[in-house]
Image 1: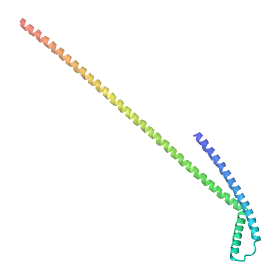
Image 2 (image 1 turned 90 degrees about the horizontal axis):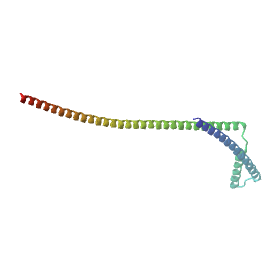
Image 3 (image 1 turned 90 degrees about the vertical axis):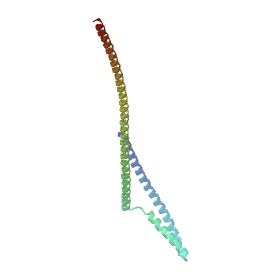
Image 4 (image 1 turned 180 degrees about the vertical axis):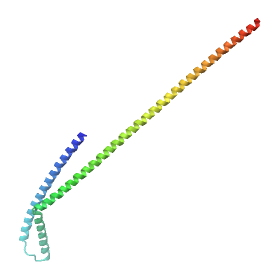
Length: 188
């Protein structure tokens, strides 16, 4: 987590630097465009001064187009006033804040999704482990029941054999007793 936080902070620092560089590049670009507009305005102003009064409609339209382009170039060439610059910077800061806010919201959402995925994965693993244990316990229970049944059958067989042996011995003793009784009665 510390590494993730350091990486996130590093990424945020890099992003801030990139935003500052982008702002500087935009400022340089605006200044370059302003200088080009100054040059264009000067050229159009010279062309407008060199033009004679329009004689027909086509010349009037051309002169109007040049004047319009000259006016636009002069407006573009005009340096920003401190108020305009402050207003532009305020808007840029608000936009930068909005982008940062959206990025943080996206990161927070991604983090929530990542944690939800981890929780789901952990729950899945726990469930799978519980199922494995249940299957292993059921298998062990069946094996134990089978052993117990085999042992009970063996004990039953041994008991039956013992009973049969006891009966055979009893029958033999009974036979011997009868024979002895019969032998006594013959003697009498």
